[in-house]
Length: 290
Image 1 (cartoon, rainbow, N blue to C red):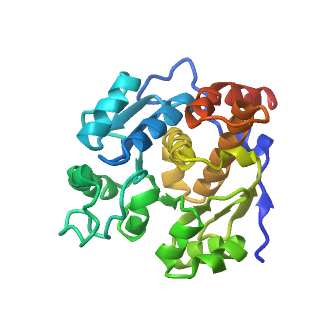
Image 2 (spheres, rainbow, N blue to C red):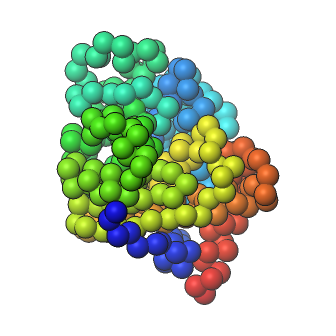
């Protein structure tokens, strides 16, 4: 068992970027999002919803057409034109992509149809030297990114990436997260009731702030949006110090869990319920350090 330091609400509050009077939508951070598919378009909606409620200047959504239609219907302030971004969130709600997203589609991986619409956009995104959050189907792209990278698998996904038995990871997720960070050379956020965050520089953090009701479809999509927003609002700092990614990942996990507690109030809730609680959760965290 590797030693992990618990990440607290106070630690999290310090990691939240509060806009100043001189900020505009660009300086507050522009997050590019390529998520969702024909089969799972809701992943895109949840990620965008979570990112906007966490606090980001602009969303550029470049995913498949069906998902883009739903994103714009829910959040018309989203922009679907390509342009400069400070960070990327890629992969939620997609089937596994190969290490070469513009190469031939591997057998069996085109099952989500319009995912192929996103392949060129993904290749362009990971070629940029900006921070990247890889989730879901994009986890295998960790070796192809050009900017600081954090991956957000659950234990079954990490088992696939590392070619390990999922049961072994479930027995000792902390060690698996540390092993993955060392082997892959990226920051790893291993999702679970206790979330473990490990970085190649030896940073080891853990969070445990979520109700058990959070074990529901879409939870990971929202976490990706929260983390993407935090990374976009700290992008320059991350480029200069990639070790910051671990602290932002831990902060995203804490915010995610606390918003879930608010949405739950002891009972079941939906992930959209969680996203609507994000502003109040962040406000409470910030009040604790003022």
